[in-house]
Picture 1 (cartoon, rainbow, N blue to C red):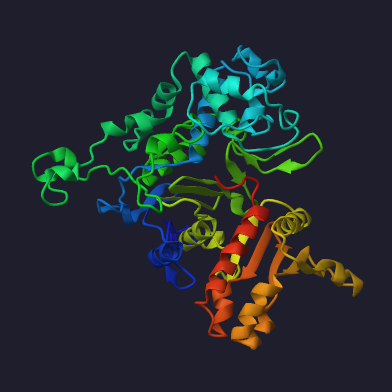
Picture 2 (picture 1 turned 90 degrees about the vertical axis):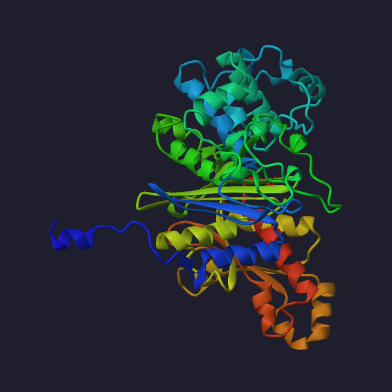
Length: 502
């Protein structure tokens, strides 16, 4: 190889895995402190490697177990993707037609459900009502059949567990295997995932019963099975009672998989290529935007959500006591995946995951100041995003004081600007309490959220981090400032994302 050829080669990875002056470790430690997260495991894929898998904090605070590479967590919404893969495998086997009525595969459904197609279930576009309790399949059908569809199949989107219960039932009836066995055979065993399974499989993994030893973690000295053991993550409610892990992972096809972060990364590599779903066009049925009959684009399938920057897609959610996140940038120049699993509910890892990815690939950064601003890429146009923001403010009864359409203003002075809108809003009572502390903070109030379209057609939502804003006034630790940050994050999340949390 000559010198010129060598200099033009793209280097794989970077020893400096930091972003805007913060190492990944520091970003995670700070985030865990801010969000009061007991334990977390991170896994990074930078194709074709998994260069980092690391645990932080405790997977079980009562037994003082460390979060580790082998810690198994309930992966929540990521379970939907396993179910979607199972359906597409049957489709590639020629045993299933995605555009057929579900009646063809489940003959004992109510007549009012017969217009629902298999693809509608994958799209969360069936209109079916939701269920949340662990019951036998027939009991659930009997419970829901009297309730009307929420909309005509294929005409809207509403993420409900019922869609994936029916998909998992179709897997059983078409494959003549239990859903558990089909997924184990075709995905978990096939990929040799050693720390992945269902709730009923957890007792098959070696994890030390520390009640049997005088000191923590001593059995490895006598039994090689306990060298580098598997830990089962646990979570506790505010009364310090252990959360029932069977209950929270009993929604078949929807919230039923347990896995380590590293195994989720292995599995995602199998999905990104042609290992689990062989044909590209079939994989795109699981992770490519589609359109409603009215022409509206739907940037989500089977729990996955799709964005425009570098082919970003993610799947995330929360169940009682736990949160999960998996993102993938599919850019040809830099394929990076980030998995984050933790034992605290209602944690949104979107912003953190983006910064972690940026530490591994400069192309994946937001290109804005993530230290000063809270940024989130949205799935909708600027116009639609602004409408969603306005609806959320109205729902929360937060007064909207002004809306500035900067692109429209630019036209009036014969200039061009990509869509850029700022909403100004707030609560006089809340703002007044801060101004009583320091009237000069009036310069930073009321609150603002900006929405714009960048040169690549991506929609961004941003606001100045309230703690950063309040530093100038000596109020960064004021309780109102902390609550403001959480409020703004929640409002931005709803406006930016197709699916609600959970």
